[in-house]
Length: 221
Image 1 (cartoon, rainbow, N blue to C red):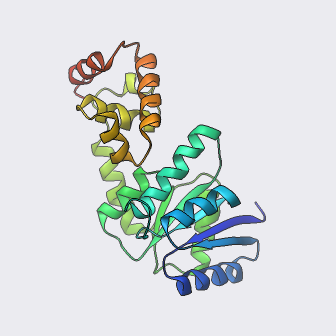
Image 2 (image 1 turned 120 degrees about the horizontal axis):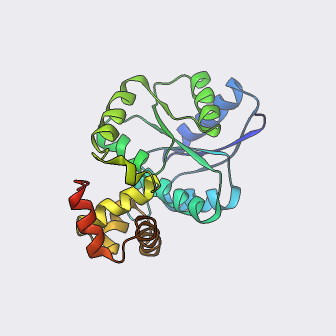
Image 3 (image 1 turned 180 degrees about the vertical axis):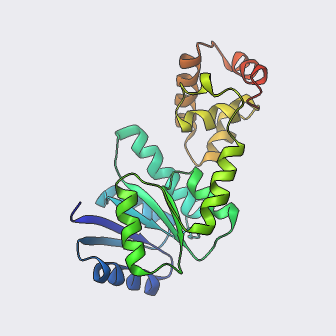
């Protein structure tokens, strides 16, 4: 894949500029099409530039305080609505479990720390663009453990649902309102409502009450 377009998002402007320069040096086929430094400008830049991959810092100012996870969720929601192809790779100094899981659950395809070399970072961007998941070695273990522990006991019925639909279904079945579920997943109320309608249709259920009973019977919640 040649001419891969990359948007660098980091609140430290000097660091972002350095990463952009190092990426092009490490792999001249990469095109850094822009930089953004907070949640709002990141989302606007992604909408305007439509990069192949966003290199996304986890801790960003602006927006509603969700940082990189808020950006990832916004990109994921737009992709679901328009079949967009922008993918996200988180890059952060933090290796805290809560930071990693928040941005991955919001839609990022991978997470690497800022100790990574420019060459390895360029390779990671290409892998993410091709659909692979990429993690720094220490982080992969607890990401797998976290998602393995959340797999329901009866996955057969849930195979009908997309990963996002499963997340929405679990929250709604636990009694969350649409607004509470939306805030938890960094998506809009309308997107939650759309997912719930799809879940009910796929599971052949008529309303939220049946969904809650269905989830309890199968020990999904």
